[in-house]
Image (cartoon, rainbow, N blue to C red; front, top):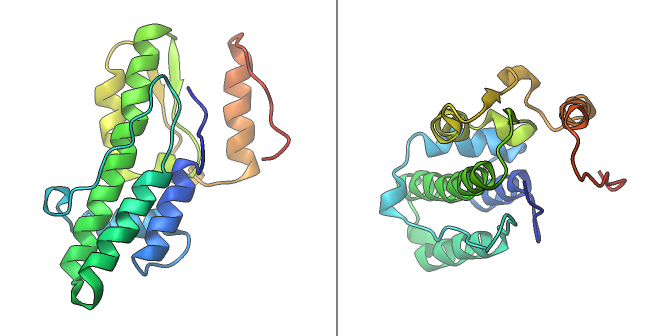
Length: 171
């Protein structure tokens, strides 16, 4: 879709989880905590860049400041609400760009892969966003990890459709 200007979504989840005192890997821990929270009680900004680029550094900073403001009075419910708000902001940003990309350049198939593809909210909302515009493929949860096999699978699917792809040796 687009490139990130700073951290990838999964890195954002991991860093938010660390700020919330959760273990590593942070994505699954944040997902579990978010299920007990209400994003509306601790709203965080939704990253918004023009085009298809992503940026999650401002969202991470907003979470950090909110936690600093709450200080020692932060409750377990506050932590759950903040996890839900962070998750919602990231997922809405990802899906907003996916929706825009499908409008601008329709494709026959959308593959949601990598560690973030295990996120409960992303998995449930992706089908709504894609709708009948493309076939949606999401690997089983046990295959949604940050590993070489997942990256290879994503590359395989990307290579099947001619595109302007620039491989990165920094992975």
